[in-house]
Length: 244
Image (cartoon, rainbow, N blue to C red; front, side):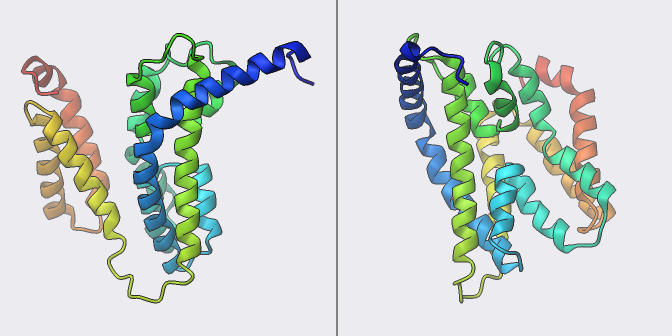
């Protein structure tokens, strides 16, 4: 049964419409990016031997682009639950900090809150944090529609890619490089935003050192651990020098 009397239903619909109309234009840039990356991911999954249902369901339930690309090699590799758990936590660890910073934003959102927490990605976090929401637009529903639309774009792209992958006949060797390209773009964007590049240089140097020491098949987790340790211990001096 609805909690709203019949007379309040039109007003409720109006609230939803205004929130959707305000949220949709802000997600259009994400639509373009997520469709391209999602299709690439779906095709990659399909040519790796998985049914289109895999990218569709993984996009729906995991909703972590970088992790989903990495998950392809994890699914194809040897059974290693501990390594998978650690890698997953490290790759997605940034969401812990996102979540902490959204405590106040998500306050009072009611039944929408669980989905807002589940569906938070880099792009939704950025929009919901930076957008100036008009006074006549419900804040909770605005953030809900931003999250829902971005989630939908990713699932749509992954599903289309998974279906198209069944009909692709050209050589798809190297398609997985799209993930490398994504991380390079993220790195370059972060580099351009920084006034000083301490954190970026720490990441590059740790990666290079661990690659030499541990080899290309085992360097990822040690690299992540060392980056976290260095940034934790050097956080104050870097902040004082304006490097973060």
